[in-house]
Amino acid sequence: MLDSKEEPALDRAMQGDNEAFGALYERYVGRIYNYVYYRTGNQHDAEDLTARVFYRAMRHIHQYEDRGLPISAWLYRIAHNLVANWHRDRSRRVEIPLDDGLTFPIGLAEHPEATLVHSEERERLLQIIRGLSAERQQLLILKFVEHMSNAEIGQIMGRTEGAVKSLYHRTLLALRDDMETILANEMSGDGESRQ
Amino acid sequence: MGNRDSNMNNLFDLLWQSKSKSSERLMELETLLSAVIKPVTPRPEFIHDLRDSLINHSYPESKPNKKGVLQSFLLVLVGAASTVVVFSVGMRIMAAVVGVLGLLRFSGRQFSRRRLIQPG
Image (cartoon, rainbow over all chains, first blue to last red; front, side):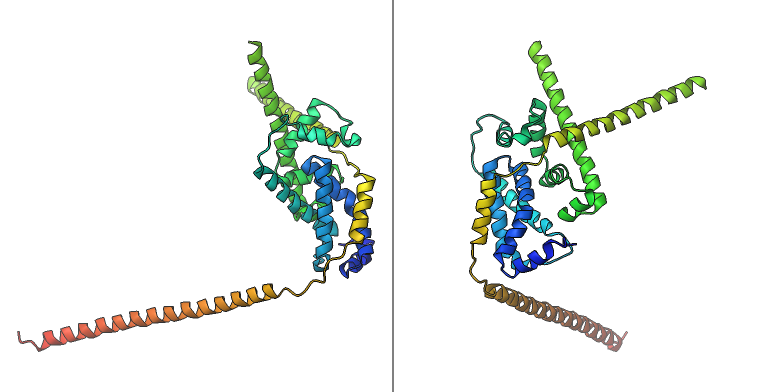
């Protein structure tokens, strides 16, 4: 299942060829960065974690086993674990929020292409997305950033195409319900404040 | 009858509307998601610097993991030893049970023999 272009580079990288690893890096750095960026919500941490993903990949590439999956699946797995550790470490620290819910929009403002849709709705949606499970966030990122098919996402996430389709549908329903709940709460809040 | 049919039609209409509303809302949500979650481009300096750093980076030669081998050997050894212990304890319990049963049977025979010997 390896891409025919990546196979020789991968073989050489596994034998310790740093230039070959550099070629793999160039191919995947954008994807991994996007994944980490949307999971962390800021450029600084996205760069730091992306670098760590590739250092870890480089350190362990000689142990890489071809299990019929693209190498991107392996890189996403490393990124997923590092982001999970990052969230765990962050939750342990006591933080004083400057303004509730503004972390993501501030981070995203560093990328103008991500701020084309600049509305309250967008900010809310990003907050709700961040509240989803890691798996659901990964699915949305792979679908909307990478424009991957359900089958490709299934390869990355170790699920069947049908399971990905089902997870996607449940994710959309969860998002819709969360948005409706927020809207309903706001409307009831407005009603109370008017009274 | 006509009234019942019209009620059923209304129900189907309601169900259809709610279904179509729901699917429309999901489609709207998908459109919104595709507008919000857009690919971002990392800084070129970051990509370049990290590439240079990776290419010039060298890790020390990885040695075979002696600790891991020793750990798995110990694990196998402990597993084998515990199997032997469990097996021998099981055998001893079985032997004890058989012994007790034999003793009970022997004492039962002795008791019935005595009863036969006693006159009357």
